[in-house]
Amino acid sequence: MAHSASISFRSQTPAPVHAHLDHERLMDCIHCGLCLSQCPTYAEEGLEADSPRGRIYIMRAIAEGRSEPTPNLVEHLDSCLGCRACETACPSGVQYGHLIEGARSYLRENYKRPWRVRALGKVIENTFPHPNRLEAALLPVRVLRRTGVLSLLHRVGFMRLLGALGDMERILPPLPPMRKRLQFPTMWRARGVEQARVGMITGCVMPVMQSPVNEATARVLTKAGCRVQAPKKQVCCGALHAHTGGMDEARKFARKNIEAFEQLQKESGPLDAIIINAAGCGAALKEYAGWFKDDAQWAERARAFSEKVKDVSEFLAQPRFKTRLESLMDNAPLPHDASSSDAAKLQTNGSSKPKVRDVPRETMPNVAGASTLQALGQNIEARAENQDEALDTLQAFAPDDDDSALITHHSSLITRMTYHDACHLAHGQGIRTQPRELMGAVPDMEIVPLAESEMCCGSAGIYNITQPGMAMQLLERKMEHIAATGARVVVTGNPGCMMQLMLGAQKFDVPVAVKHPVEILDAATRGKSKKAKHGAIGTGHSSAPKL
Image (tube, rainbow, N blue to C red; front, side, top):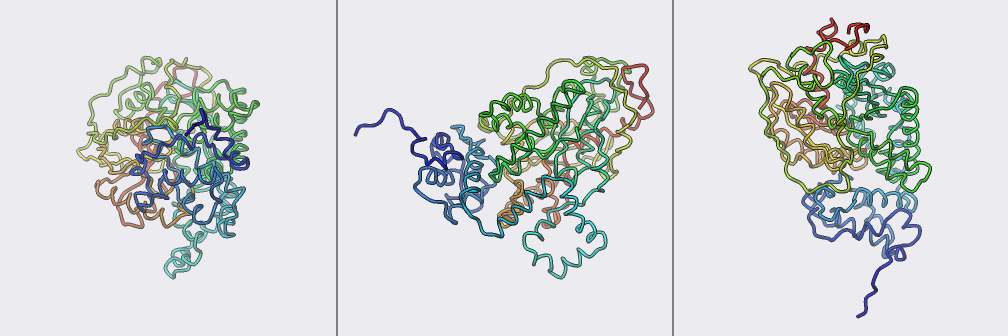
């Protein structure tokens, strides 16, 4: 039989489908099955159609016109978490995240979902990415919780009658005061000698539901010697829309963020990095270049933006920042006029260190999802104008005292901690060792391994709202592993994971606190920071006010 020298996949794909599904990339899959054991839904259900390989078959059938999207096929695509664990396992570099988002983009325009699903999707997309709207939507929850009425509604079973809305309320953590978001400073001064200037993405859900994490992020960065700026004009990263197929809406958010940080750098000078503390958002921000690769007007601007994006753990794990933080943990004196190179040479004073036993397993290189950003290697000149701002934001936004119990400095007590890999940090950005290295630097903390640490907890953006059944199965599985560690604290670098694990701790009665890595670092460095308020740390500029 004669074979054509080459196959035009584009010619096999109906035009409306090809606009969303890349047949060439679908054909990258060699059907080896190495992804199956890494897929959470396949691990739970054991169905080929609920595996990455099976879903690629479904996408190919639609792309080649062999099948129309039926409710049954769409259900299998919708049950995908988008965790991208399959990308880590894949030896062929299949860009599954890109494929599933393309499939959902096609379904968004060409498949009519049940009205309840459409209505819930509209509510989420028009609320979650907008902090003011989200605050307004959560106001009844605040009132009902404070008055005790909500607990009564749970006891009598009323919340179960609300279906998805009732499930959404269960996922919500204790809500911080609204003023925390509204009063979040746009500029935080570096502590001691300034080593870098960074921008900070504050997010859309994080400032409303978990503002203490944003505050801890800014504080830890300043302790590491960074001047932090958070422009008010930034918006949602666009990840929520991208994951549900709304790429046009996602790009609108992306353009606004690119413009906001371009304007910031025009007014205040170049940034050494743009910091994000949410794994899912970070993966999306780093993919802006791909979102605009075919847009001549925005391609270069998006690339320049994405190249600066760093997860906060990825950034702080660099030696010069990590060394500065370690000096604060150990109460080692930081010289008044130390240069950046001098600060990097500071050694710890031999206080107790944890026994780090949580060595991540070897994985295949994450070709499609790993970050291409390189560590900042150059020294940053100290800048005199660093201390021109009058507001001592470190003191004004002091941390809550609850975290201090987790850190037991210079005592015989060891706090047992375990680490859960957020999917879009491990699989989406290839960041695994850096958070563990930072946690390993904290005195009197023992890091214990977590079985299936890279398997999704079931949060997956809005998955725990749209697919609550599977989300709870995965959460129960995750909490069983966490309980087996005996840890008092579980650390993870994504707000969605944090809320999901908080729910799991309550639902499955696992006595564990859920913390972001920066919250641990903030608590561990608190003692030295309080001394700094009285001038223990110099500014490197004689005319600057003491902190």
